[in-house]
Length: 272
Length: 259
Image 1 (spheres, chains in turn yellow, green):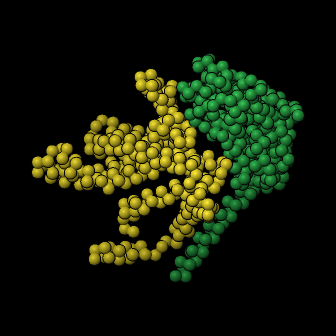
Image 2: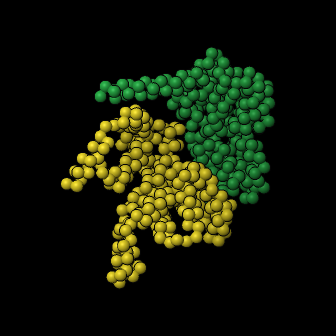
Image 3: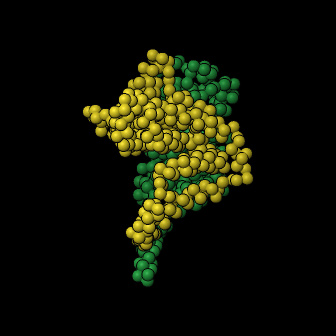
């Protein structure tokens, strides 16, 4: 009833498409969709299964899952508390911290990779210490690839989660507190369930970004099949020698991206 | 209704004009009556320093025609040319990648050759004496990927020396190998002698014995689809001229093998 009325009033207000916008909008749709059609058009459907079953592809796929899920785990463990502090605690320099922690979102990933190298490389500020104290070196290791992916992906989780925490109706928490719930119980029973949709959306975005990470990974972690050669690296290198394999790999990434989009449709296109 | 239709037509016309304008500009750059202002040279990453010096010389000697270089692994360049990238000249670090595009380029000419060397950090902190030392599992060795000419040459050399190396990374081009060593992230790599020279004071080379080394040959060719064939040919001539050879020699390249 209410839905129908809202839709009716919406169509009355903006029913006719403004002609001036139709053409550029159509160009935009074409611009964004044609490359995807190109990918699908060149896909060797007949040999796709065989192409995907090659050890090289399976290895890259396995590694991509390990690294991206690892990056999500790191991001949740460190990013959710950060989002909570940014949303709830008014500490000095909060805006600066927020700007700093979201910087990797807009930073070119290769620059991120160089920065990681200079910080966590064997000669890096922190890397030198890690090497000397624990004998840990991160470049050229799977852990290094996870680190590179977390570096670029974590901000997506932090800002989505922070936005969710800010938009949340805090009166529920107050009510829980009034009814005698402690801080921990309130967090666990009220705050987290309420913020869960944002948290999941943040995790999905973070995971998709981690899965697609290329620049920081190849710069910081290098490229070795089975150790640091994730799907995007495999696509890039396959492209130089074996176009069909590159297309097959690209198709998997496209399918995963589409799946993430479908999973998030209720959040991004609530009225559709 | 008619009003909106005329408006739509006007918008379409405007868009069409804009698109036509863009198209006109695009082809205008290339087909500008015989004297293009720029050529694009796709060259193997190992040629970076030498060709960067040849670029201004070419411009000075050819009425201001600019040269833009696209340096990358030869395998990447070959694929780009296959996919229709607007190259005028292709200089590869091996004949295999030149063969890959043989239908798309003119008659290739070998213009230089190169040897390979073990690259280590300045001062050789790990005291690497030769190929045998690279088998040490505690050593971080970086090679170019097997599809990259330098990677294939390295594999050939290691095969001849009967040394098994487990690299920690397979880089996309030979310069990335030098970078990883000069940053101290890797202990050693196998690169061209010229990359060690170009690496300045940060790296040094350990010679590979002649009987185990391979001679990398560099062919150059004009790209058939070029719309600056004359200028492309002029660049190729410059590279093969005594002047070009002198510049290449300065960066450690050897003359084409005489066989």
